[in-house]
Image (cartoon, rainbow, N blue to C red; front, side, top):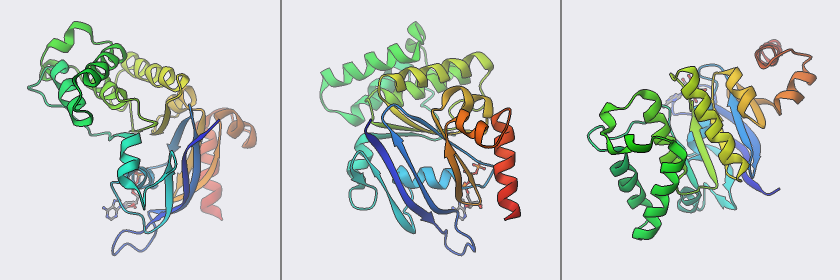
Length: 247
Ligand code: ATP
């Protein structure tokens, strides 16, 4: 299986900060992987993700997406990723359909290609006729589905999703998780961040636990539960973070 993302000792120290927000973070994501970065508030998830998404420059280290370095070829990296921040919104006065068309136009000048993007997004989001309505009339769950469909309609190699289901009800969250799993089974790779351990356990193929800017452990949910003799991921998380505090 080919490696889509290789993160190599990626570090970030914000100006005037005493500590590194990300400290030599290294991990890899293979084709079809759903890699979940988990950590407490301020652990360094967003900093790490934003560097990989080429929105923040690293202090040191590198990340390579589909053979392209974020340092030397950031434009190439942007061609093969999509990034959906947790606070992302959509234009409320546009219809869902017009929004997809508008966003498709940012990725291609070719009408046929844009049509293909829209058809893919329509199939993924499951909003049906509601795509003809203005986004201002959508629920939070509908907006999130539209945004996710928009993010993946161009078939990026790597989709980076910050808190993909935050604030959604159980059914909408489950639908989004299933969307992610289905796309991954077709070969798309995901890097997600979440505070929801149930979600992580359900959706991820690999997990990285980050604390104080350091990536402490990586492995699948089952591997980590076995390694830490834990019943669930919350226990794993607590044990990993606490043992690191003691060190
Ligand atoms: P959360 O779960 O709360 O979103 P996080 O794991 O995404 O947290 P980051 O936002 O990456 O954490 O923050 C890591 C550290 O870097 C924190 O100590 C934070 O205060 C600091 N930090 C983040 N952004 C900046 C910034 N622009 N300038 C200075 N320090 C920052």
